[in-house]
Image (cartoon, rainbow, N blue to C red; front, side, top):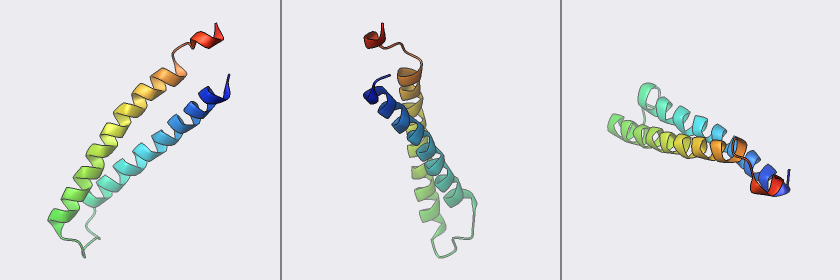
Length: 77
């Protein structure tokens, strides 16, 4: 395994954690009410943006996982 492929795998695993972070923050903004200093509409708007961005990142991470972990590299043949 070359260093470039290893680095791609590490960044892909980091992307999984970032997806969980964005979805977690979005769910926290939308469903938890202890952020009383923020207006409800601002919380919903920000939470929705985090959730949608998290879903986008989840899709891109899934594509990257399939590419990095489950496709055979032509250099290794």
